[in-house]
Image (cartoon, rainbow, N blue to C red; front, top):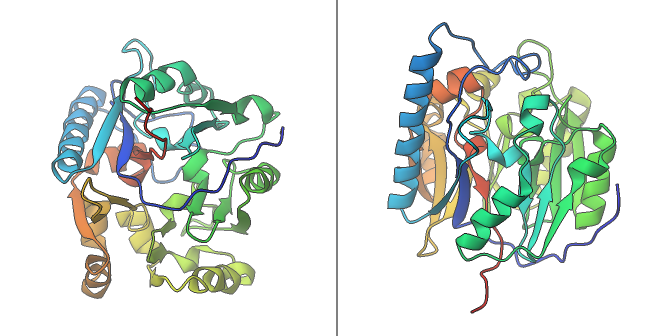
Length: 317
């Protein structure tokens, strides 16, 4: 991978996100091999209809609370069942860079459309100075964006649970280029296989972290916890059941147009937290709760997976 350098900017929460309309949402056979969170169904048309309704309601809830939502639409004739999860294939940076990541499966690789994405940002008034094609430099290695990587932008650290979707060498090279400290570890769920993405067992906000420490290899667990504790964040440790059945770790802290903290999560995640954990989160931001059971059950991802943060600078007049 070619080295590049992106200036480290003052960390902040995103007040603008990209979400992708689910024209062909459904069970993805290609990704189902290593994603135990997915479930198949015999009612694809009903699943599609319900997923679109859940998506539209989630977008409206975010907009109503003051978060800007840019909606990316792939061509309606493209069969991209996981396009609703755009955070896996790109990240944006406050210096104007757009990074594109290498996806594992062929139908997810088709989601990577740099010109369509760039046009979306430019038309919304954002500046894209450079597009960095990690996907073209990866040499068949895989690193699925902020699914595989959970960034702590305040501590300039990056956490990654190793899996078929996270190549450790590519992760380390990326962190070196970003000037972030890499922290990688092995994970295992209740079925003794790795979590397919890190962001279903770890979330990092400005003042908190939600983690399923039971998912981390015994020999690495204390080291990962110590790294999180060193930043004085509130640590909310959830069980494997909370992570796997309720997506409690698949949440994202944002801010609205008034600069107020928003913690976005699904209804299943909210219901999965115990009362003490909910109170801890409520002290750190207003909770936005979206009811997306079809998307979670069929797609194997929750609300965080549906949101890609936009840190790009505004175009100057």
